[in-house]
Amino acid sequence: MQAQPSLDQSAKRLEHNVLFLGVLAALVVGGLLMLVQPIVGAVVAAVLALLWFLLLREKLASSVKQMLDGLDLSPLREGSNPQLENLLEGLCATSGVTNPEVYLLESTSMNAFVAANKSGCSVILTTELAKGLGRLELEGVIANLLGRQRDGSARYATSVISMFGISGYGARKLAAGLGEQRSVRSDMAAVDLTRYPPGLISAFSAMQKAGTTLSNVPANTTPMWIAPVSEASSQESSPLADTSMQPLTYRIAVLQEL
Image (tube, rainbow, N blue to C red):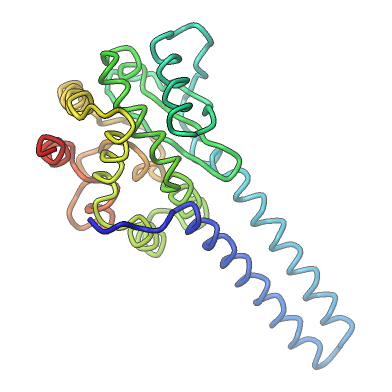
């Protein structure tokens, strides 16, 4: 796998490009009006550009909240899961990631994802994953999620999905930006943090046994989960099948080669 530039920088460029295109469109509209009414055209251009800037800023500021909307989440209460809290504290210190907000989704399946913007990130874990994995297994999963925040892939995915969705152009843009084998790259980043591939292998095996599918989750979160949330989410026809939706069986095989 070839090294890729920071996806945090890619997210920034994407956000700036979208802002530029909106402002450019406002200037074009205003410029055309200026041919007839110069003052009116100038005012229209300024107003449209300002509205676009404010709309985009609000869209990006609320991007993490958009990803969490529609999920019946409960915030992790302090002291309710000492093992998870200790792992988060230690791995955040090791990875240089600011402590995330952590939420639990009631489910008998095992799955998790992280959403991020420039202000920080939120980690979502199913209750079964949070309580059902051993320490080394849970460490591998948390390292995987924090690695996505550290390399910018969580922010990039959150930005693309919040602006374009996950179908058509949005899916193609997300797949192109994340690059091939993004799931495997995240697994490698996790192993770099923990230095213990068997922990993540065991976690993935436990997740397969418990099941990773989730019902009633918003479709726009599908590419964000650490494992497929439905049978259809890893279908070959999806442009994301070889990026962020790689099956656990394949990823386990890759980790076993380390």
